[in-house]
Amino acid sequence: GREQKSYTRRELSHLVGLVPQEEHVTFELNVFEYALLGRAPYLGMLALPGDDDRSAAYRALESIGIDTLAHRPVPSLSGGERQLATVARALTQDPQVLLLDEPTSHLDLANARRILTILDVLKRGGRTIVCTTHDPNAAAAIADHVLLTRGGRVIAQGSVESVITSEQLSATYGVPVEVVTIEGHPLVLTHKTS
Image (cartoon, rainbow, N blue to C red; front, side, top):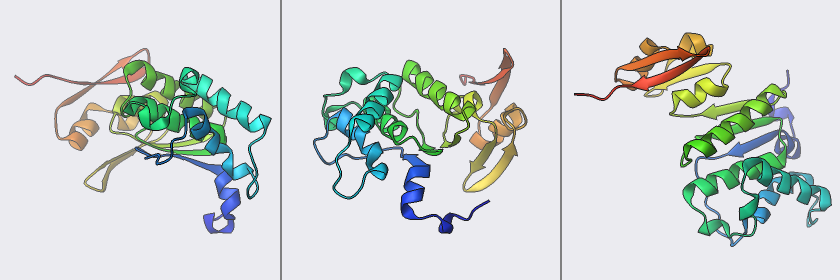
């Protein structure tokens, strides 16, 4: 009920967190220091993070499962580890709205599941999650509302059940796609071509 332009920059920095698809860290920050950057919106000019800020960063690293990487320089991380560190930074910020661009890119199955579980818990706790993904299974795992696009055009939008269908996904991706329901959840399958 409030227009974006009515918020101050500081209010927006408390309210909205961002996880870009890729973020290049140019400084030799370690993973803990990088996560601690998420507390910057709460600090005054030239203020240093306090114990509560440090605790928030460490809790985020633990929740993501990368607390063992806390002292590793971010530039030395693999693409997947870097993605996890970026999500930890956003969680340290503790925003009400989380914008994520391909949050499971570069991740193995276990880490992708961990991130999707965390996002689902945040959503169920009242946070707003806006996520772009090329993986319809990831969308089906956490979304309440899905928007399919192709070539900048909206193909379909609505509930997971009404949008994540064989017909809609086949039209979106331009290849035959089969959607089956397992334990009440859609699972997207593609078949090997002969």
